[in-house]
Image (cartoon, rainbow, N blue to C red; front, side, top):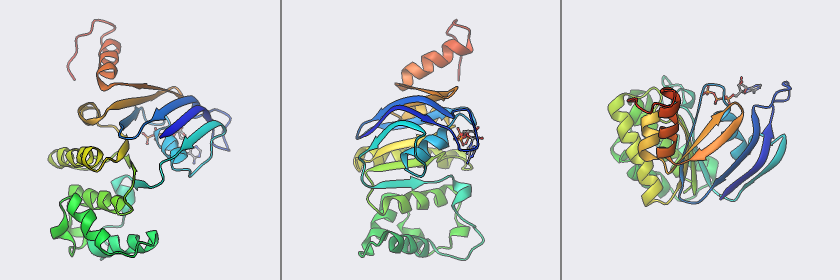
Length: 227
Ligand SMILES: Nc1ncnc2c1ncn2[C@@H]1O[C@H](COP(=O)(O)OP(=O)(O)OP(=O)(O)O)[C@@H](O)[C@H]1O
């Protein structure tokens, strides 16, 4: 469980709070999509949950013991570097100090990428690469998986496959998911909850309630819009 109470955060060189009185509870098994405009603080909130930065004020309790993180695809690697899928995963295995090399095969099997283990990463499509980075995040058998815009830069067909996979990991592997999203449809289709960041504050709701509010605000209350 993650329990965030009255959390405030500002970067040290800034007087304004990026996050202003945030309250959020993430329960085991949740699939939470974090939505918000550019600069609303989504990545900052993830950094706080990952304990990369401390809150300026307030409390953040996180009792997930193993956290897997999937960064944005373009941040993930230099695709020109001649390294195979297996070599990437084996190097991460060593970083995690996992002795059993079977963790590589197991993670590749979950993302249906076993046949690609000896391929150079630079020869894979965006969707295939993303599956490898999800496999990497699964190697430590996480109880919480945090993803940063998992479908950005990926073609539309592969996006569906990526979300089916994340949902499968959430349901079948019982891994709690927090995903920073710009993909509204994927957030609506897959999440148990939406966390909407706006003007420094946050609001947790069910996808259906988020859509109802979205429709109301888009139509000035007339409630009739297609998205
Ligand atoms: N290291 C930093 N130092 C100072 N300000 C920062 C730093 N990182 C982010 N910010 C500022 O904090 C605010 C929130 O940034 P953040 O990256 O968390 O937003 P975001 O919602 O993830 O944006 P995007 O959707 O564009 O990725 C922005 O105004 C940004 O300029």
